[in-house]
Image (tube, rainbow, N blue to C red; front, side):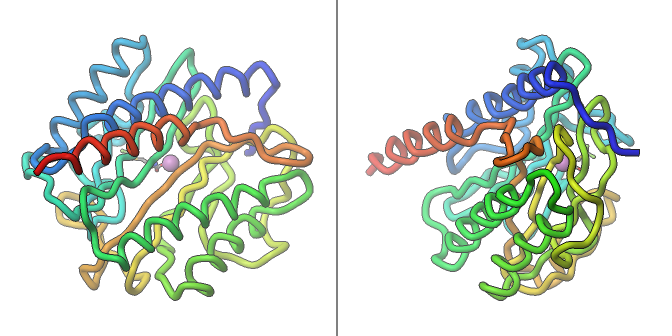
Length: 267
Ligand code: MF3
Ligand code: CO
């Protein structure tokens, strides 16, 4: 069953989504080679607690951390660990909160220092594809229009692998609500979009083939070919003429830029 939100509820969901954006901004400020993803997880846990919210991934179906930290060939749901991040790593941080009973759930992929040109391009194109999808999140379009826009930009235009096993989702009082939001599909297919449906749109795009497997920890999803994968996620409210993005990359991007400049001044 699809839950459409009232204007008041959308405003509350924007607060939840923005808290995730602010938390990811704290990550963007400090992220650098030598850091571990466990340190990131702790920072996020504390930040969320300080803002009177609940980290929603922690204990969700037994998930043991605040964030998913997915490095290089890890697609999504990577466990934070004690391995030092290194120059050239590409790191997706995905995080959710519950604030005043409403969920925020979004993700950003960071590049540490100098990655390969093809990986930098993968990050850029995956982020672009998210916005191409969001452009279609308007009343009277269908889920398949969003899905197809993402697939067209990544798979058809750039030859990347679009993960089939995992999809985005509706978002609200629950982390995962109807409808499912795949990153591939046919134009004009699937449920029709009505005003104030809130979707977590989350392309998971592989440099190589689309094939993935789940590690023996039961969570970590990796690419079969060992090549890099990138994940971006926004919380988006369907509107009549232009979708309303509830999460906010601008603050993350500003912090990312400042941090990159700072780190590149070390000799
Ligand atoms: N963004 C992911 C999702 O919506 C994160 C879920 S991870 C989990 O499915 F730990 F909460 F399961
Ligand atoms: Co999600």
